[in-house]
Amino acid sequence: MILLLEGGWLMRSRGWSAVAVALRLVPGACMVLAVRAALTGMPWPWVALPLAASFPVHVADLVRSRRA
Image (cartoon, rainbow, N blue to C red):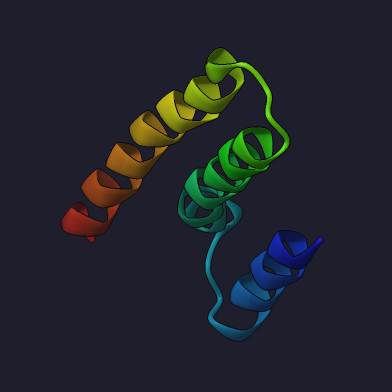
């Protein structure tokens, strides 16, 4: 919920596109899911999968911000 509010704020106040906001917030959301899985005692693949999914999105954000 907080990430959605933050995304809306970034789009409104800073005029960012939805793609720019998603590239900034999706890695954080994936890491939050990984922490939640770790804290609830889920098996290690449930921790590793969101962490692995966050990496390519983070790299895409870095590439996009370098070009801008």
